[in-house]
Length: 302
Image 1 (cartoon, rainbow, N blue to C red):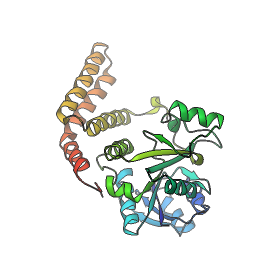
Image 2: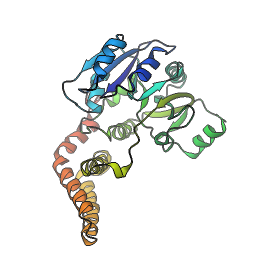
Image 3: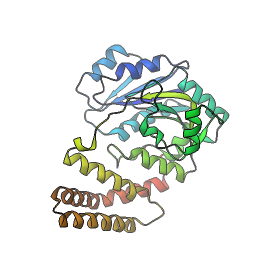
């Protein structure tokens, strides 16, 4: 069984030991590839010195989360990977997490992307994870009444995905349109277009530290970027509608919010909405090309 773990690192020295140390404890052997996005905090040196078993690929610049993952995914496919696990640098696994998920997938081949339960504490469910669960799953998880080996879900945060080779050969890699944020939402939508099913095992766990940042701490630049990505996902993934129609609807919404901000003399909100709309306008050609690739090409973006 050839299993590859792909970890994108960026200034993650505080998480390296927990992440790569947990992979050493896996009961099933794994090959690990780390793609570093030009860290300058000692992450590269620590991986080299403390985790020599990790194949480290160093980018000269920060190429973004999705493109960095694509480098690792392509390398894993070339090395005959049967399963590829995408794992955040701030995540860590239990010894039986990967082995358990692989065995579940072998018994339930209709699922091509599996996730364990994401924990933020010792046994505290990650808030970003729980929002992707329906009432049945939440109820069964809370009371410990696990009725199914795998629960089908619409989507789950990409902090930890176990993916089959089949999934990647059909859907491909992440769209480089998204530098960071939005790439997993787009990938999930593309999986749905190709009838790829996502599932969660309530019997297996991974810890995901995550970064807690209050919205009021965001700079104007970060707020603009986050809102831009929200609408960029809409433009990219509404495949059932023509792009110009989606853009028109988004523009009307942003224009309405800008007018309201002007009437309320909220110059900050006016700037944010105007900047977002301008960025989206400049992205239209790239979004159009990206939509065509996603719809027509197998192994897109790899």
